[in-house]
Length: 197
Image (cartoon, rainbow, N blue to C red):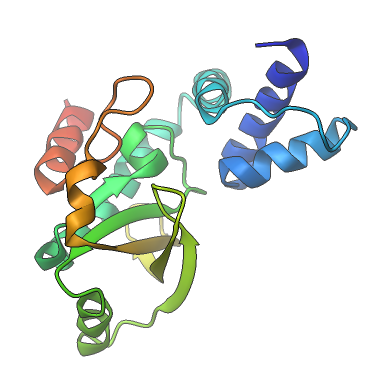
């Protein structure tokens, strides 16, 4: 990685950890903060994630593990609520780089894409529907809620991304680093158990 990409990745990592930004917006803001031309090549998300891990190890090692554990517990709660829709946790909470400023991203794999929304309505859950980029790069519906984390004492954004059941087949293919990009309820329970050892 060249020096400008490394500098962008490091600046973006700081924004991700300190401000809870997503990788894409953090990279673009890092570009502006560093005064680099708009056409400058951006680092890959894996490079930003490596910098996030380094930043957490340097500046947040005393608080981040507890915050991550609290977010995983909240994710577990929501996955149990939405168990009928084959929930899978992804993003920073799954990969272990989340802090209290991170949102939770849960993918739902539904027989009927409206069924998850109906379930929220039936349980009187306030949510905001919107379209976001899915894991294939296409637009998918996200049902976003604000959920209280008892451990953190604050509300956390929980985004339920609605996929067709057929999308589950390709959802568990390893990423560029050979990691499983998301995990189901059993996998999350194993992570939480490992966190508490």
